[in-house]
Length: 203
Image (cartoon, rainbow, N blue to C red; front, top):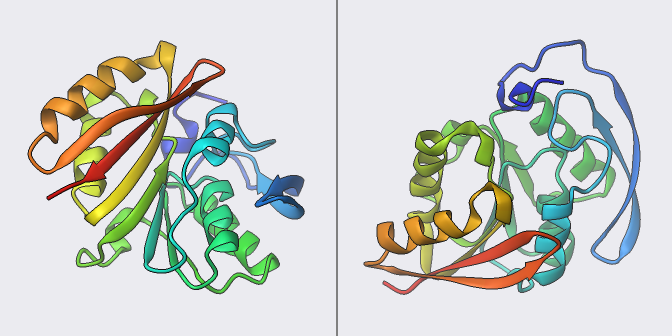
């Protein structure tokens, strides 16, 4: 699969779904996955680092998963915080369909999976979790971070997991300079070649 395949709204190739059994929020879950999305066969290492090391999401409010894939972060937040509104965004329509269906399979009615443009611009988020698509290139990545980090609610926190050899440290320096007015940026955790970056809205 081409490295940019899952960045497309309509990935190439006919969708072929298959079962996927994973552990989310401390229990085995029977879900579905498909070709043409990010990490279709498992929870990727970066996401696993975030799920283990990030603070638990707030029990209520608006929570966001940026780049949801088949849904491991959004589903985990929804399982841990059933009273919260969980938004899962992705440009890949196949990924959004899987996240919706996986949420339904788990009986989660608090998950909204949608393209970025379809999220109400007035919504502010108490927590953002993301394994951002580093390989889209700096201009697109920086635009994505500007879009969502600026929509953190006062006191809200974003958790971003980035592979060290894909530029986590330079990204941290860029965010520190770019968001210095109303945010603090720190490295919260390092594991298995990944950095977990914490962005806290202070203003």
